[in-house]
Length: 191
Image (cartoon, rainbow, N blue to C red; front, side):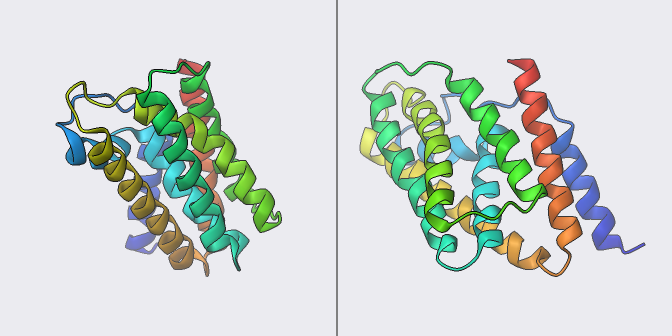
């Protein structure tokens, strides 16, 4: 068996069988906190990379439209969270997004770019609100917001690159989606 394939399987298995890993405040202040917030919450990390992978699967203009819609709505919802406006079921929405994005990848679901953008924009509301609501108490809202937008954009880019890299091995790509979905189901069970 190919050692690269084994490494991928181990990495994906570790993701699939993890517990809930939510992002938490306290990663520093301002820009650094914004950049690290999506990176240290496995729920955010999986969803944002999955958005890029699914956008790659959809192809064409979905490769930019789907991630762009996620980032745009996430930024708006982040502002709502920073303002202290409550949104019900945020953690459930985030876990559900991980599950559904994993399923979309696993089953290679094809939709129009506009519908794909709409679907991920709904998920972005929950992720953005969580980012905004968990801004460090004394952090700069602008710096923090720029940080999590930049980090999210990079994670979408990573997802696009992974989709491209695994494109010739679609079975592996779909297996990765199934593992992301399993992680989402695990997260939902722990809520």
